[in-house]
Image 1 (cartoon, helix red, strand yellow):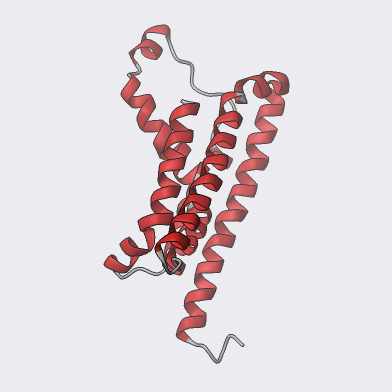
Image 2 (cartoon, rainbow, N blue to C red; image 1 turned 135 degrees about the vertical axis):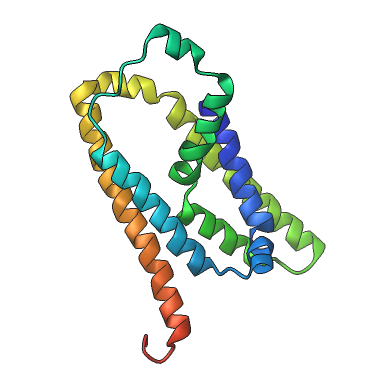
Length: 181
């Protein structure tokens, strides 16, 4: 699952960097609109993490074995890759990087290679974090894990609010330019 999340994260960020601005233009969307919507999604996920029960429901051996590989693959993309690992903040940054391409083939190639290398480093970091998460959780124990999940969920909620606010502020600034100075 760690490998799937890392690969999905790499592909999502590369696509956002290389073609994301064109997709937004095609649909007539702005980066602030993406920030508002993405921030709301992040807030919803954080809220559900804050309010979930401490103990996961018990799975029997038969139901655990019946969980298909495709179901795990789907969960690896949503919600683990998007929006938790590669959320609206990361996508906004990738879109911004790709929104102003360099002039000239050589400059464009060097810039694209630099973006790809940076995104690859991020994907490797994501892989390592998810790959060794079980060892960290074993050391924390059930109580420590619950505390980390609740604190992380609260921080994620704050990030979602901040992303939404950044988008809202930018939308308001574009609608009322003299009022935001």
